[in-house]
Image (tube, rainbow, N blue to C red):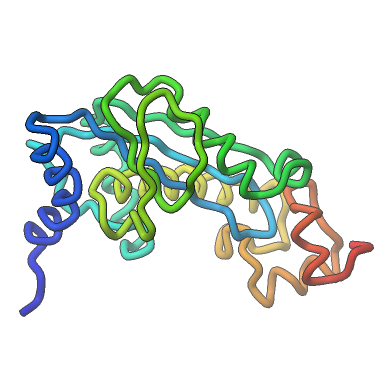
Length: 211
C-alpha cells in the first residue's frame, strides 16, 4: 500500500517524537543539512531549522525527492512557520583553502550559532562544536522531519543562486547543472577555462591540474 502524505510526515517526525518521549517532555529540536558538497562550482550551503512538531508542514520531505516546483512552494511556508531558521554559505575560495568537509562544518557551525534549543539533528556530519547537544543521523534527510525541512531550505537558496550565476557566467549551464560535474559542464570548462565560481581543488580531478 502506498504511503499517504500524512503517513510520510508522521514517519519523518517519528525520530523527533521518540526523542521527546525519551526525555519525557516536548523538546526544541532543530535539523541541519547541507547542499553543494559535490559540485565543481559555487558555494556549499547549510541550513539549520526548527519547526513546531505539533503543526507539521504538509509536503516536507528529503529535498532530493521533491521537484523544484514543490521545493519552491514549501520554502516560504517553512520560513514563515520556523521557530528558528538560518542558512550559512561558504564560498569556493574557502572550500579550496580548507577542503569541502571542513568548509561544510564551518557553515554548519555558523547557521546553528543562534539556536538555543535542546538538540540539533545533523545529516551525517560529526565532530561539530555547536551551541547545544547534537546527534548525527546517516541519511538523516530521509529519517528526520527537521533535517528534511533544512534540506529543502538549503537546496532552494543554493539553486536560486546558481540560476542567477548562469547569467553572470554564461556557457557553463549553471541554471541546469547547478555546478555539478555533468558531461556538458566539464566540456565547457575544457573549452572556456574555469570561471571565478569554480573550485580549483575539484576541477583538477576532471580536467587536469593545470586547469
